[in-house]
Structures are given as structure tokens and as C-alpha cells.
Image 1 (cartoon, rainbow over the protein chains, first blue to last red):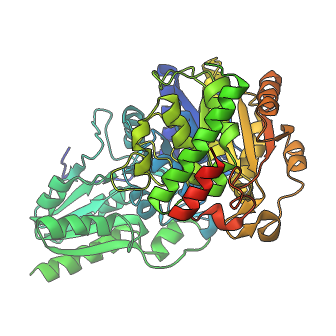
Image 2: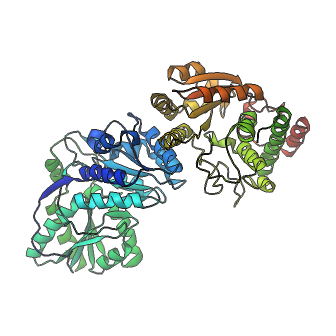
Image 3: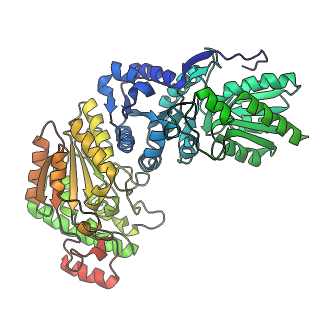
Length: 320
Length: 271
């Protein structure tokens, strides 16, 4: 739904909240949906599913490796398990199990990490996941997604359940700015152009889609026409959309993730393979963050619209 | 397809010969921990488990997970003898393109219940299968074999805690307690004793048996099935390299293939 009306931040529910609600819908429609959680159900929002389907909710305690293994065993027996915890814990503590018990046999396990990125705020770096896009994308056969808002999260959780094979979904703690209307369609691997533009393309996902839209409005005032693409699926990437984006001659990638190891480097590979162009990357530098209010952290670590605007100015200058 | 004691013993001997031949042909592999597990696995596939090799995906079948995946040769020989996989290809073990991969791999043998090889993971998989069976009110029972060195992995104890807490009485954990791991004797690498007491403390019905005596093994599987409200752990006392004198209790043969001369000596002992 390309638009050039000015984007205004209007907060909707967090993507983790949308995940929790979508799980209940899935549970009602399919008795094979099973949910595993590691003592964070009230934070991951799998608590809604737990309340309605206690017999299909497995409390795993604070033991993520075993939880991922249980999910794999459920999948081998024909269930569709959703395994959930904070991203930082399920991906890091469960990584060997995601590799050997899920990816290797291509098991039908859905992993949903919540509290991704640094926008969880005050809890600090031990709880912040800034590397999971890279880790999840390194698991052969995994689909990896990072929805921007409630509508996207809900639709992509449903798409994950319908997809046969392992999926990782990255969701956030904060209320998510509303990007999409109720009629928006989502498809795994198919990006969405949320703003038209011809001078440069901003490829973003998660919370950074809203920042990219704000940036595009600022750039419009400077005479720079910026396309904004929501790359909600990081693997498999939408190669066609990236090639078309590269045809503008300049790309900026923006993500709430380590810039050296996330979506950006994967997009750059496709650009190099299809239509080389100049690129800039907005993301977290090679460092851990700290405690603080989410907005303070996003500002300090360079994840605001003005950071994207700066990157666009730079990339457009390099293009000329 | 229950078998008599004579039939089971002669099958066990044939499978030991096949293990020796496969690993010698491959030039690498793990004979010691394959030979120690023979009776425990033969009893499951030829006597105790409710399975149908002609219908390997029967939803209500019993399931076996070899968590100590390096003992793949014993599982391959048993499954081939049971009719799941071609017996005439056992000598392709570990060779490019073989279905008999170095460690069990469901991509090559779909009738395997799990790909294993990274130690510590099988019991969690068994619990997942146990939950699924319970949700479906299926009579399926799940057997998972661990090595004794393998219980050094922390994930085993996460699974032990969860299996008892969730009262998964359809899951049986079998520890092949042969006392030896790759670097030497378990007691010298990282002692795990008192092993049976540990399982009891974690809430498992725990049985100790001689892992080479079919009647004792049968009794243990029956006792496990009769035990309700908690999972069962069978600590099976076995001999690493069992059946081949120069391999028995010899850490060298944890992960070393016999030479062709050693193969001949071993096969003579296994007549």
C-alpha cells in the first residue's frame, strides 16, 4: 500500500501481544498446536494459550535446551509446537538443540523469541537479543521473520503455523507503531513496499519500519524520494524486491540488531549478486548496550529516524 | 514377533558379528559402545516393542531413540535384521552416499525416530514424544538409550527433572552403563556415581539390571510398563566391547575400528 501521506506514530499492541493472541486463534482451529514455555509465559504472552488450553501447554521451567528438545519430539510425533521464551534465551541457550534436533532433521518447530533487541530497556544487555537474526539465519532450512506491528505479527504467526518446517519469529516488548491496515496481506518471503520512492530504498524490519517511514517524510522535504520496504522475512529474502531496490542506485538497511551480522549483510549479498549499488547500514555497532529507557537506548545506539536520514544523505551523496 | 531366548541369543551374536564387519569395513567407528548395547536393543526390536517394520510410520507404534548416536552400528544391524533397511548394504557404513551415516540420520533412514550424535539431546526428544502420545491418548511407549558418559551433559538432568515433574510414565530411559567413555574410564573423566540414586532423587522409578541377560531385561521393560505416574530409568550394567575378549573393558575400542586381523580374531570368538 504505497503512500505519501505523512506517517504518524500511532501505537498499537506489542508484537509479542499479537503473537499471544494469534496462538489462541490457532489453538482453537487446530488441536495439534502445542505451546512450550520456560517460565516466561506472562511475558511472552503464551499465558493466553495456557489459560484456554492447559492440556496443550507444557511448562518447561527455566531449561531452554530441554524445552527445544521437547518441541522437536512433539514435532516428530506430528504436533505443531510453538516454543517460546525471550529471544536472548531461546536462541542462545537452545542453539545446539535448534541446530541438531530441529534444523538438521527439518522438524516442524516454530520458535518465537520475544523481548528482542535493545528496546526492552531497563533489564539491560543480559536480556537483550542483538544477534539472533544472524544465529537463526545460520540454521539450514529455517524461515526467519521479524514483524513490524500487530497486524504483521498476527498474520506471520498464522503463516508460520501453516508452513511445514522450522521457523523463527522475532518479536518485541514495546508497543509497536501501527503500520498496516486490517486488509493488508502477508506472505512468507514477500516483502511489502510501505512507501514509494525512486532515489533510494530503505529496507527495514521490526520497529525500524516506523522509523524508516518517519525518515522518508523528512527526506521528502529535502527533495529525496525514499522508498521504504518492510523486509519482514529475513530468510528467505525477497530477492526481486532487493534487486528492484538496488535499481534506485542506493540502499540503506535499518534493523534493531548488530549491523555487522543481521539482515543488512544478507541484503548486501543479494545486492552484490544481482545489481551492485552503494549501501549504508543502520544498526547496533559491535557492542552490548546498557540499561535505560527504551527511547533513550534507541537514541544512544543510533536507531532513530534521524540516524536513517543521515545514512540516506550519505548514501545518496556516494551515489552521485 | 516375540522370540525365544535361544533365538534372541543367536540374533545377538549375529548382530555382534555384523557390528565388527561394518566397522572394520568402514575403517572407523565405535565398536565398544555398540557391542555393550546389543541385548538391550535386540530385546526391544525383536520382542518387546509394538512395532511393524512394514509400516514404520504407524502412529501408535513404540519408539526407540539412540541418544548415544555413536553406537549407530548396533542400531543399523538391528534395524536391517528386523527388515527396516537393506541388510546387504550394511558394509557401506560411513561411506559417501550410504544410508548408514556415521551417526543416525533421518534424512537417509526415515524409519529412524531421530537424528542423533550430539550427546545429551535424546531424552528431551523422548519427552516430547511422550507428551504427544499422552495428548493423543495413544498407547505409544518411548525408549531412549543414553551412554553413561552422556549423562555428564546438563540437558540430561533438565530432561530428568521435567520427565518426572510431568509424570511421563510412557517414557523409559535406558543407561548403557559400560563404565568407559572416549578418554578413558568414566570414574576418571567425570564420575557420575551414585548413578541410580541420582535418577531416584530426580523422581524416576529406577531399576538396575544386567544389560546382557535377556530375562532380566524383559523383566525390567515389563516393570517399567507397569509403573504408573512416573517415568522409569533402567540403569543397565554392561561390558564395553562385550563378546570380544580383547575389546572388553578396553577404552581403546570406544572409538577405534578393528584391523582386518583383529576382525578375524573377533569373528572367531563370535562363532
